[in-house]
Length: 174
Image (cartoon, rainbow, N blue to C red; front, side, top):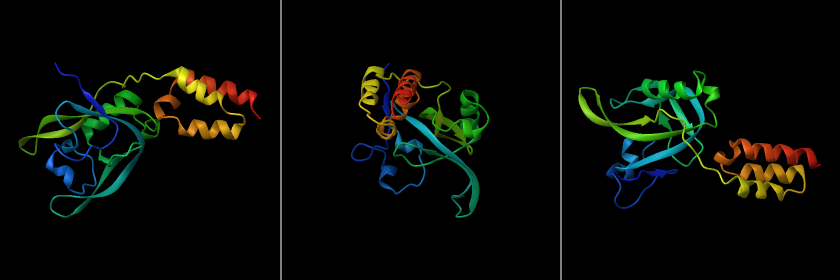
């Protein structure tokens, strides 16, 4: 079995699906080549964004936005149920949480086609706690700490040990 390549941004250029050359508003299975998956952080869910359908009509659909530099993704029931099983049924609890997106062959609209799906597990992120703790320790003021914190990757800001270090530093800084 080959190893999965994890992406955190939209890839473009040579040897990519031809649809990547189109200006697409939404993330699609064409953004992933065989063996690739995306690790994405949920920024928000818009409940009723007007999405243009193939016939040109506009219809309200829930749309997921991500922190990473990727297009937004139309939320379907299957992916909504998966995220709900991971993080709860309320989308406000999804903000800041990570999901792993992959392309799967599904039967839809009477034919077999590729669709985006969300893995049914919470992605395991290995965080270099020592590195980020050292970075936070450079802060001389609370403003410095805030600035450094905001520059850390989301995975570090979600790590319990890194959060504990930040809270310890907050008590000692003015």
